[in-house]
Amino acid sequence: MRRRALTGRRARVSRVLVAALALAAWPLAAWCAALGLITGAPTERAGALVVLSGSANYVERVNLAAELFREGRAPKIVLTNDYQQSGWLSAEQRNPFFVERAQMELARAGVPAERVETLPRAVTSTYEEALLLREYAAEHDLHSILIVTSAYHSRRALWTFRRVFNGSGVEIGLRAVAPGEQTPRPAAWWFYALGWRMVAGEYVKLIYYRAQYS
Image (cartoon, rainbow, N blue to C red; front, side, top):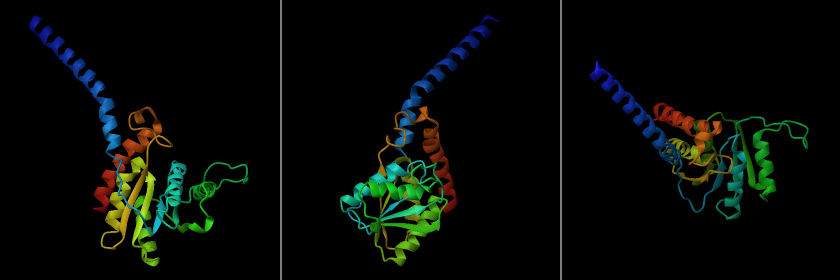
């Protein structure tokens, strides 16, 4: 009886220790998981800067695109359009589409309107964006594009575009916005519901894409 009680106490202590170790290791594991989603593909110059749709992150994406445009990385900025409407804008007295908001941000950043092109066909996924942009690159004889997207979306975006553009002769570059503006930082994303969607949710999407489009 005494031996059984001792064994039970040891088991409880072991469970507590395992739980404590897991709790202590979680911040490091979560930080590494977030960093694992962030990647890029350097390109000095491209035929076009492409800002991928993302209603939650459009501001940080277009701001980076405007910065790259001012640096002379590409002669124009191309926007994809997910046809999602934003909240009420008093100045317009309507709910503009997020792509319109992106156009407004680019104008505020000093990008001339004639240097911004919005693709008319609606897209609902990164894969659809890649297919549409492959068509666009062929029609406009582009040999390179520089994709602009958010940090935690960058690995799936780069994988998808390289997959879709394989054999096209078009060079794919990618610049990701550093976390912290509209996305939680890698060290603290798990404190926010948005962080769980962007990091944990992105791993689910990445697994799906690898299974669906490989």
